[in-house]
Image (cartoon, rainbow, N blue to C red; front, side, top):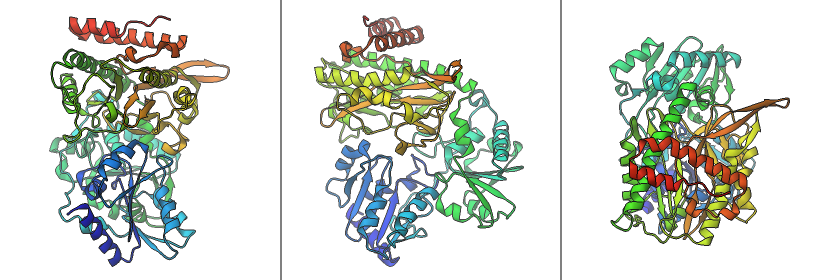
Length: 597
């Protein structure tokens, strides 16, 4: 079917169900960022492949709401289709709800599949709609009626992450979760987020692109633990280990039946942001429900000492791969044809040479020239361009290793940068440096320090439309909560930065049709000092890769910023050079030469 035909079929099913509008979010029953093909509904329906957005279809309108990271991409992918791009004014907000409430007449009926929308979102929709007399139907999966050849759920095998990497056994993790449940007076804890389940039970899988996840649900009680999973996915040895550690294995689709059987004495803890409305509705009304961020979400954000040791080691490996790549690129650019796609493949090959590499942690963003201004650009055979020496090259990439996950962005000038490019690069770099340098009292939230990343840009009338920092998992999701460094709209504003959290630091600047600039490092929250005013924390920059000082306008950097950059480059050279050959070592030495104060 064409996009037109698909939209027409959706409208026919809406009419049959007596609906005036239908909401389709980019999500799945586990509220994941990356999903199995079965749940990539918006990509199938509209052709838009971004990771954030919502489609609303009425009788005479079809629109995609997405944020500024995807404006350029969405305009290109929706071109000549019946789906209009609606640009979000504030990222990560459901502005389509307000649009529906203002556009549809009273007594209208709106549908959404309750299996793929969270409790929090449905409540927000219902509250807005009730004010104008619009009703919400959560019982119809209209897309499933239209998508005739829809893929099934993946049956890929799960595997165990050894405790030498995880640092803590699954039995010990369940013990800590139960201790936390007891404090909250919960008898049961429902886990729906796939990364929570993977972390808790030290299992990984390949059910979704890039994130090493296994499709499952789990319920942990005071005495029992249940995992709801397609048993074909569990190798016999792993299955027996899970059973030996106190887990009862149940079919994936029995989760609703289990929840509906809870008794009045039970107290269920759920995370309303990651629990579907359909699952929530299966919990009997007689059961008390406690709502909070899930316990594993909070626990896994604080990396343990073994994980931290691995993270520091994995950053060396990843830095070596990146150094070898950039050395190769400089030696061969102009001598052979190198494109965005071939460059991405070459970088992955260098990563694959490193011990314990598994696969990329997200689709590499290799954007040359104007493509660098598309924040989440992914080159395709149709968009792929050759790298030359007349613009900037932005490379945002990462790797999953058994011993950690990486995420790094570097922007380089293959040729002679312009004064404007150097100014933009330096103003964004000042943000990266000044966020990395901050020391702050315990209890500080990410939004309270984000201004450090934007200050130099704002003072020059510049800005960027994405958050500044996201949590990063340990051989898990490259985007991991609950912490965020950004506005309140882009994450849980109540979460403090805590010792052991691994977070991105990625200010940028994007000029549509020209170039994009971003310097991203991962920063680990570590102790700083203790004074009469309390305990202070700081960040350790753990990412190891040179920053292209050919793009830096030194006159815009102050003494402390130059010192940070010089100290960082000294660390990069000391950590990486023992793993390089002589030519690469000399090249890196030149790239990390100190700037004069």
